[in-house]
Length: 347
Image 1 (cartoon, rainbow, N blue to C red):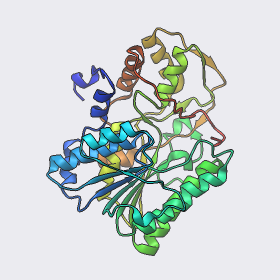
Image 2 (image 1 turned 120 degrees about the horizontal axis):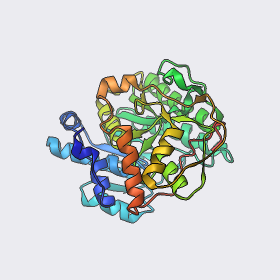
Image 3 (image 1 turned 180 degrees about the vertical axis):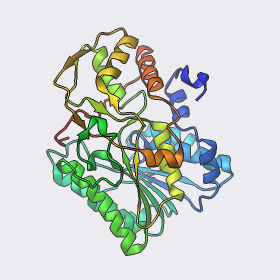
Image 4 (image 1 turned 180 degrees about the horizontal axis):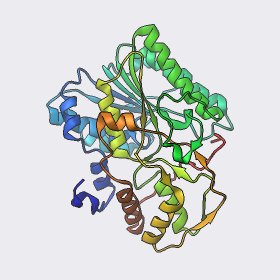
């Protein structure tokens, strides 16, 4: 990464979204081989809009005339309009169990972003329906497509901080209904591979960050407001969202039957205390800490991902700096906390 990138300042959300949706040369080269239209299901969430923009930019740069169709309820009409302005086609649809999935657009490629996490402790049946039954129906609807589905590192057990995190060979040991239902999502896509020959990739992500939300935004907001930082979860993994978007799109040409399973995160085991102290220095706030640091945490080893796609293009120190600058400049923060501190799997 160049010094210019390291010192980059995002003047506004438009500049930030441009950065988050910028395709690499490698993605553009691969986009030339995409054989049909791309449907992004659950495109109105945190990652969807910039992923759709990146896909469209890559396809256009490659001279590939495919359509990028962004499926969501689109309660935020402004977000839909911004995508439409750059050539992405918003599709209004409710992705529930009773929805007519045959009405969804035809596509050779699918990115699946639908998921239920928060509220799953109170209504676990909703989480199971959304995270397990719905992807089974989608896999049947798009049985002949390549499907890239986001999963989560929560399917793994808590491991010692010095272990380097769980690799893909680690047997799942999900804690709580949310994590169990996410493993269910993986299992039904594995079933689709066996039943229909459906090609898919399952991305176990922990945690995508950008200045408006994510682990770093959670910590910066807490420190800036003078609230105590809970150290019960003392370590975490993070990755720049642009990299996560790109890996998802590049997996379209790597989807397989049985599915490709891939951890997706940054290379560091991040100390929450150390990052909080760095943010505190940049924000001119002295962090206040609470809780006892535990020796285990939810940690992923993404060495396989990095071998396939290279290391994330933005280093942890730069992400911390960008987060602090964004907050100091009055940048918007989304009210979408990660709750990464939870150790009992209850969300």
